[in-house]
Length: 398
Image (cartoon, rainbow, N blue to C red):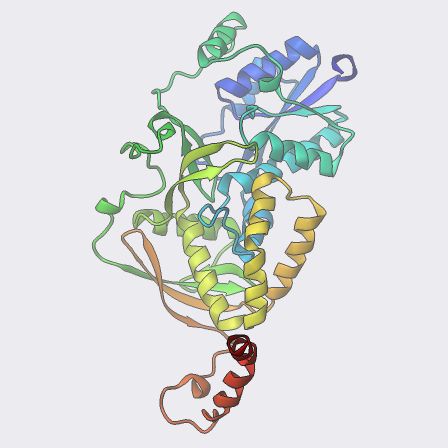
């Protein structure tokens, strides 16, 4: 395969791993390497990434701001679906991978590359997500996964390779965690977190204020939606990325959206991770609350029954699979009238809905009231109960 590959597009962060991968691909495959660095709102200074890639041996380096596309085309569709993996995880890393991989394939096609490459290890989910996206969008383009090919086994091996190949190794304060950040979340794995009994260390916070240090005074906000997507905070309309960034700031200040869990990876092992998703958690809670006002009961229950399957598709990497696209069409149809505003109280790690309104509300105060009404004849309930309980009565009599 090596002789067939003349040009590769590498997902490149500028850190130790991908810098070494860039040089390793050039040395091993004797080919041209183009890098792609995506700004998904990870909060890193990317100003020197292009120069570093070129200095390390890249023939061309793309650095692209993809924050709006990421939130609009990947985060918001999962929010419409109420997607939670294993009932807790809002899929912050999972949904970023098809976004990056899609752009890798687009650049490979434009540049005439025969392969793309990523820095995911052979133990994790990301390798699957990158490669399934590539297979779905252009199976003729091969994927290079150095962690599954080379003989380096440790960080010490990587540092030695960097020294042997004159690769600049960034000097940073050592931290025990592996992290992944974007506008939706940040994840922490490794270090003391590898023992599920250990409490996360104090430094294992970035987006969320520790709840003990969060303000003692609640903050009340209003979040407005159109067709299931958040569009405005406190009446101010914003772009998708701007809105999520604003919610991150508000939620992070109050310690909202922190999850510590042991999850089941697609590759078969259990993994302990800590996630901080402040803005996404606020949007999720508000969206769910608004649906209570706008969604037909049977539509809501049907969609809810599909949430675990939908979340699995995203987590496993099947974003561009036909089953996810079909289910997304159903979800999008269900959201046509999920339009309105939710008022929430942000306080000590919680986003608490305290009011909601919608021009498409299905709530009828005249029906729901405990006071006297002229709409509902309570005696009708007797026949209803007899009919729905008929099979139970028959079973008991037999």
